[in-house]
Length: 460
Image (cartoon, rainbow, N blue to C red):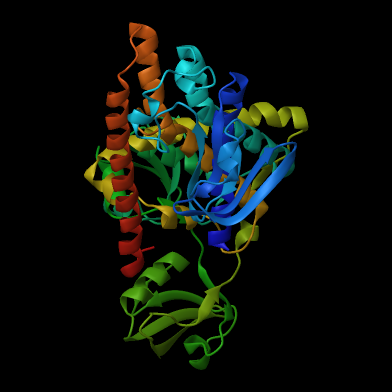
């Protein structure tokens, strides 16, 4: 299901991105030679072109001269077999589909990209980025209209939060509730996390057992947390009250019952489910003593754990104890809210992007596997569209980076031409395009290589 969701989301985003280039090209009467979803080295799954007043189709055809090529005025629409994106091939343009400047040695034709004015070419190369960003704003607005928003105020978590190991190292204690970061009130956890990780918030005031306490974090806290591979700063804290057993449960065989409240392992307190999970994993394959309360009376049992460190019991659902704040939006209310959400997401992503250039951030770069893991294992339209909007923001931002072979590289060269009145040499453009493609392939290999290492080491 994760793979299906990822392919559908990325296919949708690639289509609208390339359609942005296509629309501006056609607006300025520029010939679009091919429009493909997925790449098609050696052969295409489907090729379609309209000529002589009717549509013509070819299935599983090789990239060789055909009747299609005798009608260059019309766009060839196709589906490739390599699901890593897509492309819109524009006549007279040096890009990832045409890196050979010798093919452009003839006199520029009126229908070619290279014959258009610089400001027109700027719109053509930026069309994909514009459409992706606008699409994200539209999707976020529709999400607001259909599902509204849900927030969990920090004060509405009765047991506080459990924190990751890096946060515990620097003074947080499980059960703390964050009140403010650098003097800014923290209403929701994501607000506090944003201040801490993205704005280098260092002075934290927490509510601990009814009293206020102050925590001062080091400047490199965010990098250290990322370097440790910790994806969550904190999660709502719940006691481990047994809500059910799996078949063949070790806990059930040892005599545990529904409603038992686990409080310790080997006399070490585990007052929340996450503390229990961390402790039990560290004792995998060993015999442990588990202390729990039943009818307000403490009891002990001994269990020989399996190699996975599981007892076969799962936690009671405490979600009803969390007072989630839901807000609905009318159609016209949802539009500015969606726009605000999109802009806020872009700003947050840009702030996160600086961490990529650190040693810790580079080690956590992920590829398609990391992206796919963000989707749920069961289909959920709300999450699907939320993730699609987020990925659309990322696609727009990444494509605007000034790297040859990306839209941003073409935009930089075009802006340079508009400022200096001098068009870059086509041989230079060809070489820059090749360098950019090498950089992108290297990044692609590195990111997906990280995914492979995480998969092999069980850290996904």
